[in-house]
Length: 143
Image 1 (cartoon, rainbow, N blue to C red):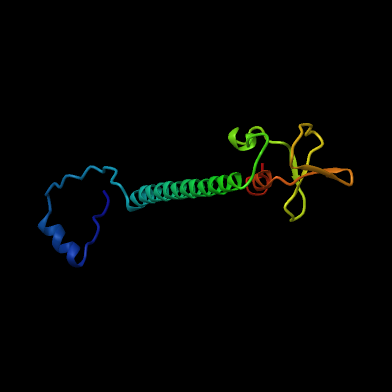
Image 2: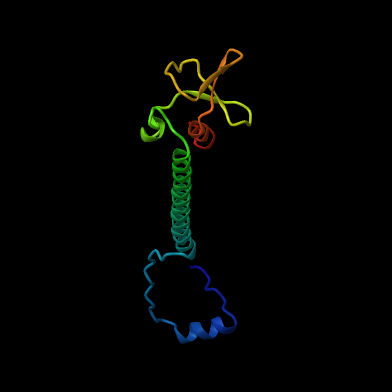
């Protein structure tokens, strides 16, 4: 038979008081820990921040698009076009192909462009475009 443990101090007093008393054990339930609550809170915060950033980007894009549209309309008012500004009215789908050249106000037309245009001119074997609208589209919208 095993020898009973020697108790000292308060353990000795409590064991004498509660000797023979049955104390039920508490069932262990999974309590949400601070770590899991903190993790959920962090996820919610991250989602809110991502949503806010997406809204800011969307608003900035709308503002930028409105600024581009305003600039394009101003350019259209200041010039005439035999093609009736087909490049803008088509939603930039019907654009002649161009290549940005230097920092001047002209762009180089692709050799594929066969249609006549009042803004096209040739110089030293290359064809260039001096259309202000096409230049703005190429420089600012990368199209």
